[in-house]
Amino acid sequence: MLVVGITGTVNELTTPLFGLWQRTDVPAMLRAWQGKPTPAAAELSSADAAFRTARLALPGMHVVSLFYPGSPFGTPSHYLLWAKGDTPLTSRLFSPVLVDGRTGQLTAVVHMPWYLRALEVSRPLHFGDYGGLPLKIIWALLDLVTIIVLGSGLYLWLSRRTSPLEARLAELENLADEG
Image: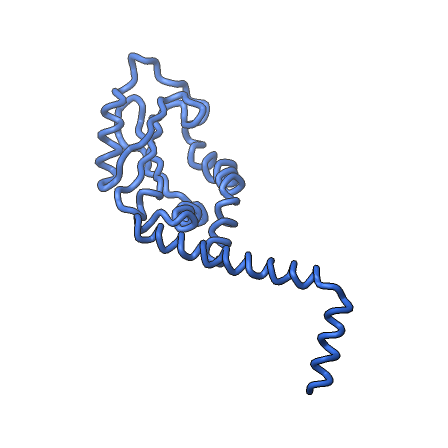
């Protein structure tokens, strides 16, 4: 319950933490390219070249999305590609890559801050996604144990609350007389 509770709390921080990163770190990284004109379509290198550049920059990772230069999600002059790993752990860790829109050359592989990495790693731990079916079965059994403990505690609390006060006092008097 503690692991699920802590990772669930961390998962709830997704929106504010990504918002913090987007308001602080991202503008600082992109400052050098702000205000520059977006290349015309004839000036752009191919999206395929940007894709290949990103794959070469991040071996063992798969590109999962691509934004063209001028997109509201990137810079005016770069392709923005997002890649993720191919192992159970790294498949949850995303890395943004900036590729120059005109030349197709790698500009930067952006390293996410530690708090976003912790968030990305905690999400599958919260849902039990790491170990495949064996971990999901263990997670389900632990869920059942938790439900039984909570249910039995609720039952005991409710049954105690419904017994009349006089009957409980008589029980205590009988115990006192016997002892």
